[in-house]
Amino acid sequence: MPDLVQFELVSPERLILSTEVEMVVVPGTEGNFGVLPGHAPLISTIRPGTIDIYQGGAVTERIFVVSGIAEVTPERCTVLADEAMAPDSLDRATIEAELQTAEGNLPTLREQIGRAQGAERERLATELRHVERQQNVARAKLQALTELSR
Image (cartoon, rainbow, N blue to C red):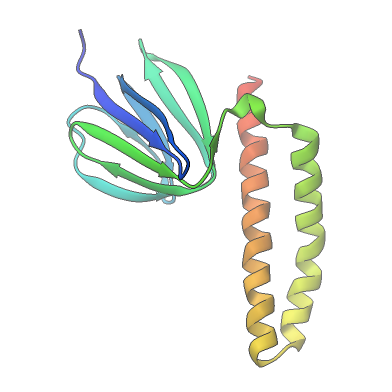
């Protein structure tokens, strides 16, 4: 039996998954990283993307995460996800509409920031970061759906 690593995926609501796996690939902010038994200790933020769980040399499960933190030790990988969902629960039409809305709002917000001052400028900058995050999450969801259809 090959060495295994304990993988746990936790959301604010509950423990989603706790199992031993051959390898798990996590979408880190600086790029995807694979975790095998004996991995060096690591803490990473997570970008929107798909966690791939490997058993028998192949991906056996995928879970889409919006953001969070991963902690890796030689024996374990724990992902604390802000949101997690099965990629097949994603609806392409809804996501495309969300992306179109976000992308439609960005030019106006950027223009308003250019004209605003003080507290109004800060409020608009915060709103801009929120819309950019929505755009990034929608793009990552569409990418996950594309990968599923291959």
